[in-house]
Length: 121
Image 1 (cartoon, one colour):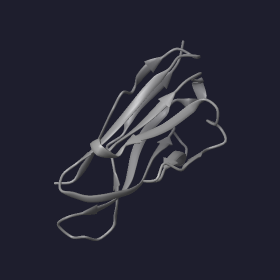
Image 2: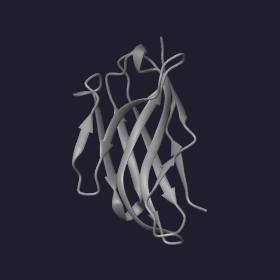
Image 3: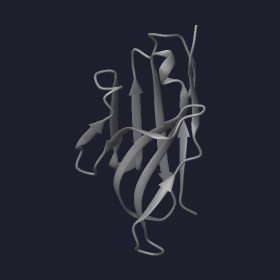
Image 4: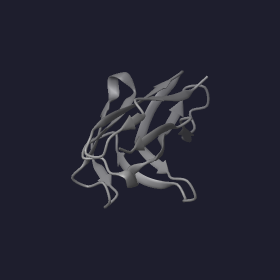
């Protein structure tokens, strides 16, 4: 069964760093765009950063210069390095990927279960 599994969330002080990881597992033909989204309490889910299979990236204005998205195509894994964290970065962070499973050969949109990031002193 195809799934995305996130790790790396937690509690960090303002100005600190965290690194999130998301690994796709299952019978995968190919993965196109991968990305991270976040949802804070009482707010809509928003884009944080995305990366194409070729390595092109796009970031939300609020995280530019602080967060870096990267991926390891051999491991079907996407990372989010978060530096200079602020209390307003507190949210549940979700991994997203556009995947073609070998079972169907149809492009699908897949989500991880989410990992909590809390920035607080």
